[in-house]
Length: 472
Ligand code: MN
Ligand code: MN
Image 1 (tube, rainbow, N blue to C red):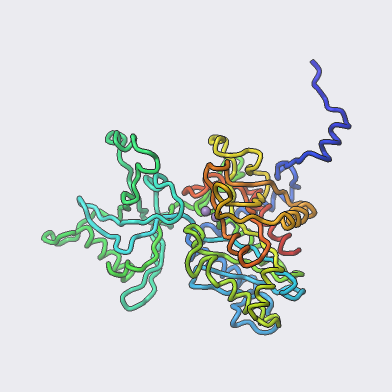
Image 2: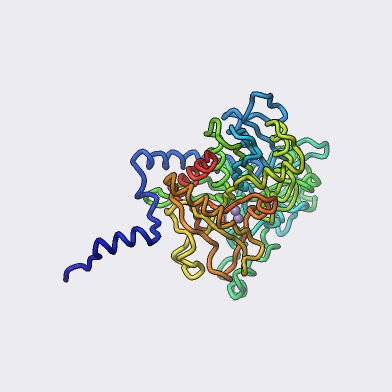
């Protein structure tokens, strides 16, 4: 039987009227494909160096310094590339543009914190010959993801005398790792009957840190004492120093390529360090843009953007006012409002890629697909768009035209079926300040799991999208 073939008239009409969102890969030249591959190498290096929010900010600051950015209070009149860091966990970069700031800045936001297990303030104890650490999970985790895997312990502590101590165990190939064993299947009858959200209770997320006793056989809690002795020898810290410390348990393995075709990056923390890296490299690569460029890297997004390193803090306001002063604009409250009102923003954050195995959770016409470019999410939220951010149609249209005119491959995105769940980003806090802002970012599989998957071509396209936006 001959194949059915549309008439030319039909195919022309389809071309004109029907939306077509092809694969990024099909649109790439041989040189582009090489760029995609090279960019992913740098990206994985960034992920490996920036495994916690503090480390990501440190790495971004190193990159910024190499790219000629100067701390804003140190910058003289001639410098137009400046940065400001807040408490080691929030960073803002800016490049002053040719136009006055009040005419409209370009802002890209992202966040550098990721879901994980934090060590409790008084974590160390001994039971049945083992020394363990109590943890408290941070952000939206599935608790069962964190058992039976290699964990690294990274963080910042202070001694009784106030000296900073950087702790790192488990990242180097010959380091020991830490782990939370799971209950053996043989004895799991009761556990297996429980719901997935309950079968690993939060108080069971106890990390094994050692098993050898201290030499004095008459002493009590000898294993705990031996661990404290090791920690004191290595870091000069005592048990009380854990109180107030910021120690995180994160997956120990580095970022890897995934797939036989090496098309994906498999790594912890890509939500949202992928947008941190793609926006940072975009702003760092620009010389003298038309509009003032600002990229901000927030902390605490995963727990609702609370606190003085979060998107709800005054950090961006203060930085913009310092920048206004530097650019010759009076840093008044009224002018700050106008800078927000006239500015344009992209809220860079990952979006849920359709996972074919769990197709039921998604709405395939409105959710994003791996390898189809940066996702544009007009609105976020849960249920009836509650707690979300909804971009104005005028602004969504402006972004769409910008991307289309610059060959940015983009696709519609959203977080699953209505009433299946939901979530938000930092966009609403910037929108509340008066700016037009829309969510966009690469699709990701396994979001918030210890091993997230993101396609190399989507990552590269996200970088290009941020660059085109900042140049606009
Ligand atoms: Mn995120
Ligand atoms: Mn997240």
